[in-house]
Image (tube, rainbow, N blue to C red; front, side, top):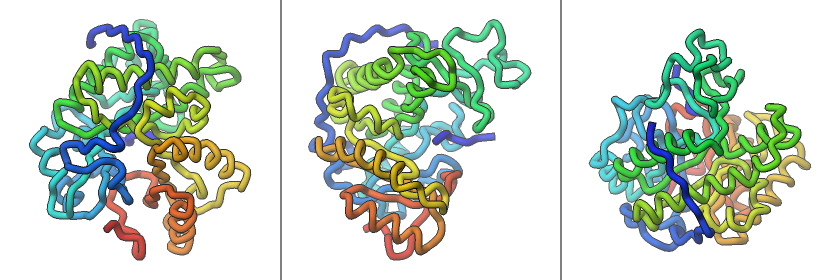
Length: 317
């Protein structure tokens, strides 16, 4: 998942494991994750009033109306959304930690002046090649302290706006950089460094910034279920395209692999959200029924994530 729209300080953290208490502890909305049984995500064309009129328990949005710093949401707007006419809501902010985007506040156009997806010689060492599937998005060496400093500054903005937590995108960047990955770097430590980065984010928000109930939901990267410290740190996990890729069923082997890993999170008391980009009504029903039978929280919508989707027969309550 990427957010589609056409430096800070260096902080060294030593984390000795972060247990997660955000499932039980009510946040500013008065909700905890244990109260959630439906959710939505919208990253473009965000209308807080329209979202507020829905009954979704948890909403994932960008920190800004259009991704820019100029139109970032204010704390009073996010507070209002939490107690909106449609009912109380947990409000989570999107942030990518595995890729950089050229429309974000931290971007310097000189890093890729001809926009060919190849960083210019003076670009920071942490900036990797552009993602050909998502023009304007660039791989990052997320273990680099200077990139981490940007992320911490970004988190400050999210905390200032009083979001209840973060939705961490491009967690699976460790596959790209790791052994056998497309980057060719074959970095042996890539997987552990992603685990460590997420733990550092938890420590930064929950301990250093004093937001002990801050929710952390990674997107994809379910293979990290093999790291118990990672599972203990996150509040839950969201996985895209578990049963369907658009309206095409995944192979049973692919789905079974994903579910086996997601169940590790569930068995450890974490909330599992599933997001399939399925639009055929009969398939939507199949998706919701399969997800709920597993104890997951489902949402079916369009891949552009540019609208509110209320699926008939599966309305939020």
